[in-house]
Image 1 (tube, rainbow, N blue to C red):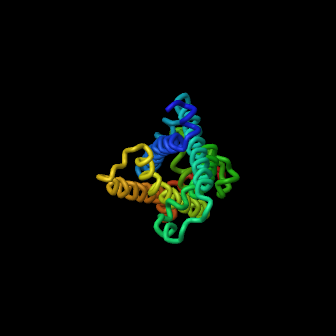
Image 2 (image 1 turned 90 degrees about the vertical axis):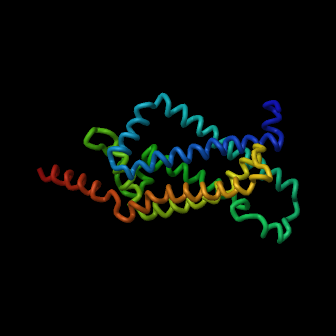
Image 3 (image 1 turned 180 degrees about the horizontal axis):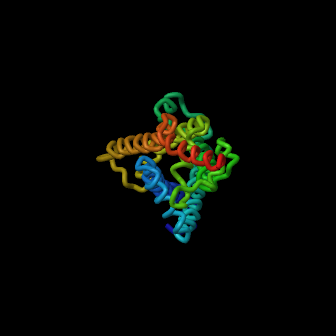
Length: 245
């Protein structure tokens, strides 16, 4: 298949969506592993953040590549949805709707909401726009004792907002729905899903999606339950003492 047919044919678009979906799935897993270092304490997560910020020549190409991948994934999903609707102008029969999973029937909409969340998440913790964190604090000024960006304190303060936490959990639930169907469909589009182990792949998709969901929401829930508050409060006390002096 040449590059022109890859972008024009339905099979080519499914291949693009599958490959980009695989790349995004791997990113989601790696990003989760990085974020979970918050449970190793401030030093670990701040060291991780310093490593990323100290290798911008690697990070920026990765970010640009990720944006291209996201763009191709969304483009292929929209084109396939439009083509499927055009090919089937009559509404689905009621029994077909019941048979289809909720996750599969909401793939496009959950994808759009997840994309909106990603934009907010980037503004919140990457670009660190003060207006969107709902805390009144400027995250760019947070530094630890080693003059590194205090990622630990930023995440704790950021998730102390219940509105942000609820939005985050909602977005992760949509991500769970998206992945629980998308991972299995990805194997099918690539021709890696045979009748012999198709059910095993489907179970893997659901289990992996649950683990990702629980992993991501464990951070804001832990913060809401008080994790990291003593660390943040110690900085507040020190800052107050400096003002008094």
